[in-house]
Image (cartoon, rainbow, N blue to C red; front, side, top):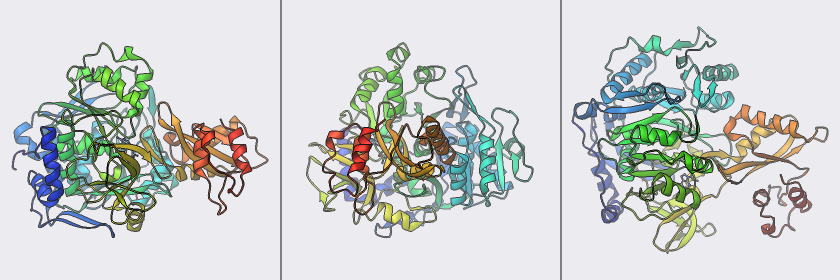
Length: 638
Ligand code: WT7
């Protein structure tokens, strides 16, 4: 196999500007040039085919490849003995695991063979419900090796949420662990899978169980298979399935403003090219660097920038099992010092949580190897940005604030570490190939000047744009491609300053961002409404010092139920059961009515203002169906 040849790395702001111009004037030529650096079985015949009105987007049509050959095989000759995955366990004294490219390749092949031996093949869906252990990375790559489609479900979701996702994609197999150690908790992972199966997952034929802690688990001989029984004796090579560029690589569920979470679909070729290109350029990764992204592989950040992007570039990617505050709030900085981390990528919520614990936790750790520090998941407030820059970056390490989404597959607006001008709370300029637009929400017209603010959209396809939502293409069209004709609509609002730098203001739809996790208000309301005492509810986000946004629920309950804390606890338990702990309301206010328009629509704008304590900015409420409801809401605020 040809040895590594990476996409070209931009090395100055001037070069960025030139590259950007080129990428816009000749997108096909530009992306073909990046794609040339990968290993293809067959070259594409068309670089791009697209029509946002359908939507249809095809990159590198006619090309064939396997992404894991590009992540693994093609590095064997040049860096087979370099660490690919550096694993830091939950316990500070626990065993660090270094998987070299050669070892990772062999492990992935073994699991690929094991999956094939279980009857799994191209196009089958595999659900992963696992903690951050090396076997998760290995088996996700093994899935891609054999052309199966992965659907990783964050291991904090409830049995119900897991079952919903398994059933939406008709997964044939679930890969899980026995237990999960996280901080000082021990979470029974397999038990949640058993509960999901008990709720009904008719498509599941096998549950492949990785022995993580080794504690006893309930066993069902009809379904359950031990991972090590199947994997250990497998051969160390595994022929990769040759995939079309537009074959599905994975599904990842994400919340929207309505209904159940939808399965965002990414395909092999474009996703490969874009995650590698963006990783290399934003982090300015150089061979030999140690890169650490603190996300979980259960989210898109983990897919693109723990696994695929870094491995495609032959990087050493650190994978961390634990949490930022265990055993104490210095853990991140200890790990950075211990492994001499060069690029560090985390979320504003973690920065704020650690900042709140005080500077003593970050002081005294040797962070001198850091070259770029990144932020992702939600707008970073100025105070957190300054703290990150000052205390982690020691005032000199560049901060990259990277704006993107599950649907975009990779980073879209961001500084390039050390090259771009930086301005706190501004994500900055779009990456090469990314044609952003601001659109007037009333007229639907693109706003051309600077400064401006409006709906954040993208005018032209990029290689890792979502292709569809699993099983429901129409939903993909209406969610992303109808708000603004001819453009992809992100759901965010943004501002562009006089220099053309973008600042993301936040969601303009009914989606809230809690600790960098996306939550649909409708989804939380549906969970609350499952409680038998609840008649109706309305959920909004409110500013929360650590989480960015907290979840505020206004709930109408039946007259004969006591409006007390016991009921609040029951409602919270219901949300945990339906979705998981990340969706539980921070505040619950019982009301007898919700303010509504004359057409019966809940006035969320008013509820948001009240929850945020901005009662002086309610505007005219006299045209409501029930103006008196507003006063009740204000009086009862919690
Ligand atoms: C939403 C996407 C992309 C990985 C994690 C979240 C918000 C994300 C930023 C940022 C301001 C941001 C947006 C976006 N968001 N990054 N740097 N600055 N807002 O992925 O769950 O798909 O959520 O997160 O609102 O639409 P996601």
